[in-house]
Image 1 (tube, rainbow, N blue to C red):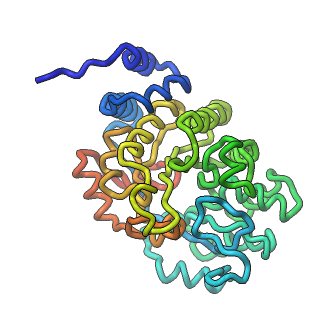
Image 2: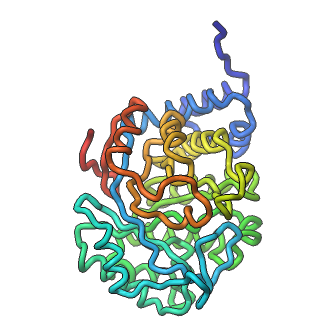
Image 3: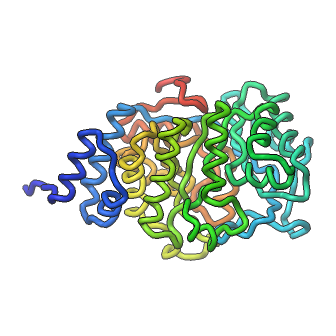
Length: 364
């Protein structure tokens, strides 16, 4: 029986983690490059166990995309449509309420709302979407509009991002999702999402939101043209902002989906990259309480594996997710509460139903 021994560099990193010292980008690069994936996983699992014990969180939520019309041309998107293009839609109030009522059950705690940057409708449209949901479903939290959407609203309304957020909060906004971050380096954004918020604008939108009392989410869309160093720069920028505001609740690494379901496996991230990225996220983001494994992107079995690679959250039931599925996600568009609970329990963890803000609703 052989015993795994850590090499000198891994021992140095393990000592830093055990002593509560922050890892550098160079440390992160080593963790991406070492063949010793199981040691990376073990370190991440230990950090997560200290923060969250055996708890694994989930929420019953509904995903709403009010419009797919978008001015932006992002290199990874299969969801957007141009005005008048076949398949383009913008829900009016009646369509929105019908969409929700057709899918509603009384366990749903959160609306998760993102959509296209639709310049054919005024800023009031986006405010009214929130007002309508709050009026008819006051018991549900509204998690709406990415940092990139906040910057877009600022442009179409001719007001500052702070004023945009103040108006959204008045309408009933409870929290912001983490989308639109992609990779927070300008090299990446100029190639992949040139029409959307810059790195600084995305971070500024969240910093303003935190200053106004909102807790928000953060994502990273990995697996295309970015380098490992750019992923780590992204994480470092998030943790620097978190040092200032403590406004982020969770980090969600999102695996890039191919543009077509028939694109072939070579266009997808590998299981090794997915697990390593979850683990490195847990180790680098020392000031984040939660790391989410997003089953929509990596599938339920890898999500279960991620629970020993540093993740403590598997997202939610997500009734009819559209954006990842528009670009070839192979997972189902929703999952039942019982399936989620089974997935967590068979990983030897404790299923914890939560609200948007990680308050415990029920332990199973």
